[in-house]
Each structure stands twice: as structure tokens, then as C-alpha cells.
Image (cartoon, rainbow, N blue to C red; front, side, top):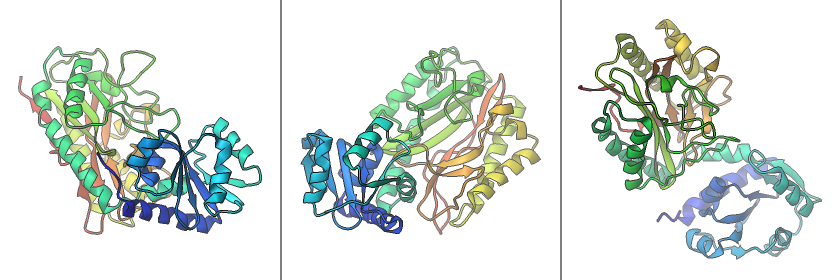
Length: 397
């Protein structure tokens, strides 16, 4: 089981402390699961206090023993009550807090109010943007986990054609895929940060199911099995000559490689094959310019312009009013990380980012064709982290 080395955790904390000093913060309390894992090395329930200088403090409500075995930090203590947090901080050498950061993008109001009462004389500000910007730059240590996730994605991809059978349901197909991923070590949870956003392993869809939008901020969704979970695999059965979309996330030790491929039983109609070729063309055009310093807005506009030039603007990244305004996004421990390669993005690409590019075309009543790959951004050029062939796969009937 992965234990994040202390040297890696210290670099992460030091980067946040630099942001804290810029904002005049005396401390930050981390509570969100993924942020806890990133900074503390453990996702056990608790409060990870980071002072502006010096070592952090991990106060654990549940489970203390697991936190001790999972985290490389020294200062880990059991916490009985939230009211004890100020005393622990004082005993840690912080006599008075004037200004403190919390993850206000995800923190429930009830917990925020409780913290506010405990620290009634402390000015509380949102530190979530700084945390997300730190997390969007991946270390060499993290990059190796992405590469391992990519290898597992390739191993599963090679087995997909043998699973495609006319009359098979999306549900059965997804269960077979998920079995392969779990056997390969998939953790079984796909994390998202956005409010009310959720996903399981990803989405699979046959034919017209790939053109069904849903509440998730994606150009595809699938029908799902119930209105209580209106996304992903449903009971649609596979027919020949229709697109099969596999939009799954391979995960290794928490790190996500998002990838999409299009398959079919027998050849697709010519216009859908052409649209797939345009999706590959858009990917290649973006990758040629995806170096540190490139504007995320400009890369998105490049994709829009190519879709328009090829006569496919109506179908690009959705159709009609359901278009999403991006063609890529950051990935890491969550699938919806920064930066967004889309409309209004404030970011340029930076060395160390890992992004998923997903040019897709949606055809109402017919389905989705397109692809998605994960890329590591470096001065030497983008490194493809999803080592799956980009070709459209047509399985002979």
C-alpha cells in the first residue's frame, strides 16, 4: 500500500505555506478528503493544521491508528472534540491566530459555522483556489503513478473487442469492464470536487445512449438504470454499425488517467467515421501547441475553429443548447482538476500539469464518436499518459 514519502509531503506543504505568506495567513485547516490525502498522506477523518511556518499538526477524529500508519508526519494526535483544536494549535507554538484559510469551495456550512464559533476572533478566508493551483502541478513522484495507471488502461483496452457482442446490454458490458479494472487494482471510487458531481468508473454507452446529456458537466452521460442515478450504463443492447463509447478512468494509487475510445461491431456509417477522424485531427492540432505558456482559451478556440471548418460545429462537445464550453481539463486525484481548457479559462499551460483532452462529437439519436487522452505538459513536449492506440476500432461481424 502506498505511503507518501515525507520529503514529498514537505514540498507540498512548503508550496502552500508560500501561498499563505502571500495572503498574510497564520494557518490553514485542511478537512476535505482528497486534500487531506495530498497534504497529510492519510484520508482518515480529521483536521490537518498547517502553520505559515514550521511543521503541520494532524488532529484525527477517526481512525487515529490508521492515520499513524498511513501518514509520514510526526505530529499526529487523537481529537475528541472540535473545541480542543485551539488548544492543540496553541500547544504547537501558535499563540494567536489572526487570519486562517479553509476550503470554502467544498466545506459544508454547518462545519464552517462550527469552526467560526471556535475561532470567533479569527478572520477566515477561502484557500481552496490556492490549494487547487498547487495540486494542478504534478511532481515526478506523482507522474510515475499516472504512467502506471496508463499501463493498466492499455491492458484493459486490449480486451474490449472480445467483449462486444450483438444483443449484449450496456449494463453487462460495463460490469465486465469494471471487473477487469478491479482485478487490475482499480480503487472502485472516482473522485470529483464539484458540488453534486459524482461518477462511478465512468460511462459506457451504445448508439443513441451516447447522445444523452445529463446533470454531470460532460458532453455525454448515458441513460443509466434509474432516475435516481441518471448516467452511465443502462439496458440498451448493442446493435451492429453503431458507435460504442467507453469513457472510463484508470486509477493507480489514487491517480486518474481519463480516457475515451470509440468501438463498433461492423463498420460505422461514413459520416461518423469522418467525425472520428476530425476528433483525432483536433487532438493533434492542440498537442502541437500544448507547451508551457500556451493559453487554455486559445487551445479551446483552436478546437472550435477546426470543428467549424470541418462542418461539425453543431455536434462538437454536445449538440444544440447542450454544448459544454471546454475540450479538456486537469486530472489528478480528482477527475475535475484545474486547469480547464475552455471558454474563459484564466490559465496558461504550465510545466507539470496533467490534462485530459477529449474532442468528441455528439449526433442526436445516433451517439458519440471521439476520443480522450491524458497528457503530461513539459518543455520537451506533451507526454501521452494513456498509451492506447487512437484508431477507431471496428470489430468484424
